[in-house]
Image 1 (tube, rainbow, N blue to C red):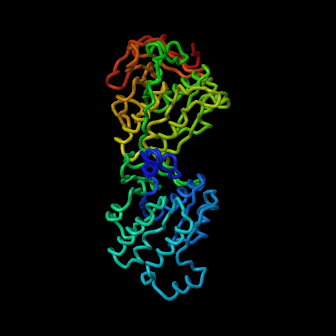
Image 2 (cartoon, rainbow, N blue to C red; image 1 turned 180 degrees about the horizontal axis):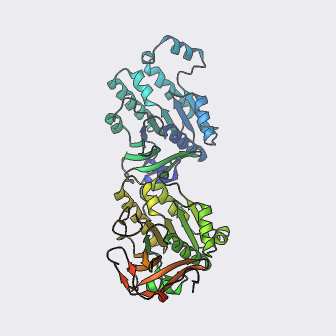
Image 3 (cartoon, rainbow, N blue to C red; image 1 turned 135 degrees about the vertical axis):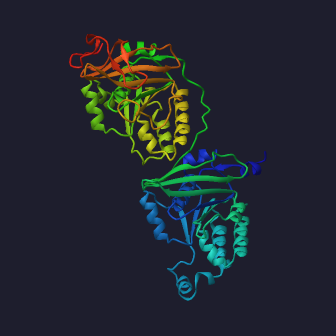
Length: 506
């Protein structure tokens, strides 16, 4: 491949690392791209990030604005903590000069000569020879063109002018005419669409889609977007994960001999375990037990909490004798609180991937707890999407030998009315079922393993207790009635049951 051909296929960064991953390396250099979206979707922010990325690599950049003033652009940059030093801002029909004032005073925008307007841009490009240029916005160009045919010809002329000058161009379009401009899309080398919508509960959800990128593959579909101080962040719908499978089948202990026995030896690394049961039965406490045990082994655990606050989590753990605070303080356990209904699904997936990396002390993450899937479901637009997203996350964690625990709270407390918000049991390698049962007029807790793909687990039902010294697993109980009906009642001797006031862990 010649140097000229290599230059033609060279990639440049958009200024957003994850978008570069979606584009499989970034934008092709020396091409013209269309970035379209309604007002408020982040086009200007995207354009500025593109130019700033070039500036950081020693490239010249021009921002041509027909719709915003230089002061407004500087204000947008300052809101993100950026400086536009080194970025040339070219205002067309600048109201600060006499000619600009005269044109704004004497003529309607549609009466301004389009040729002279575009000519100013071309002169500036010839003089500066920039490597990157952003043209904002095309809706003003439509007004100046006074016709669809002239508008298309002018865009084609701009494309021919910029390409071949070592200049990568972004044309921003606010879709003021409504609908899709397919003629414009056909002229562009690539099309990136920014979208926003209101969810059923009232907040905004932004997305980015790559409509086309000639001569290159990309990750299609809707990718979640957040606009925050520091710029636009894009969370890919999926990632290309070519990592080898790291798990070697090591068994992870819970720290409780009777629970390990119930599980057939413990939990296999890289597996996923569903903790299923009604509210308050001890599912989250079981997940914390595995996290604390990992920290005791010198490993790392990450807890993703959708519902429980720091104070409630620490108070509950301390009440069970689990030293969660100690391991949070030394970094062995990380707790990440996520607002249910606010975080986007792809954003959550990226947080999981970034959090499980090895920490500065070299501790490998071996346990992840997601508490709960009910809160996770609140962040999803559709249940089917939840299952696909969850499968991707579990596969990613499994390949890295990380044991994942998923808490699912069932609706209701007991009986036929109990159900789950979405069936994920087939995705999990193991399912630990928690139940309340009646015995001698009292409510007790029961635990059983109904599935474990990686071990020959015990089929019995054991009593499960929570004490100030930890989690307690009793002996197998055999005298039950109504288990299949969903209303288990113990009819055996009372002396085999745990007394929560006297129970102590092994």
